[in-house]
Length: 77
Image 1 (cartoon, rainbow, N blue to C red):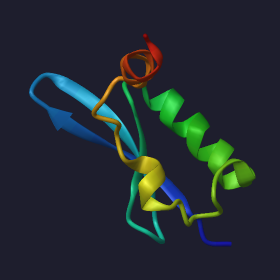
Image 2 (cartoon, rainbow, N blue to C red):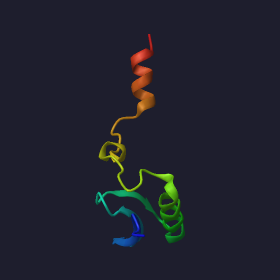
Image 3 (cartoon, rainbow, N blue to C red):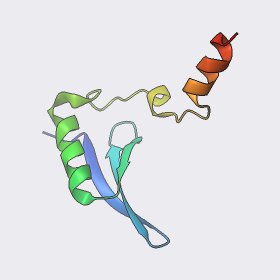
Image 4 (spheres, rainbow, N blue to C red):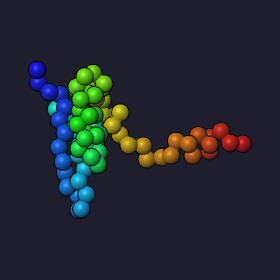
């Protein structure tokens, strides 16, 4: 059976980040400072803990606003 996810290191200045890559879509679905965490997350995803290799892109977008602040501004009187 073909693996849907893999993890690999990338070096940025003096830091190493471990990325979890979704093979089918090409998305990076997570990043970790420790290899063990990336490995465990890959196992979790391979065992059905994700979207079976098809994570929608909108789920991976980072929010640029603080939702708590936006909520407070909307509903404060």
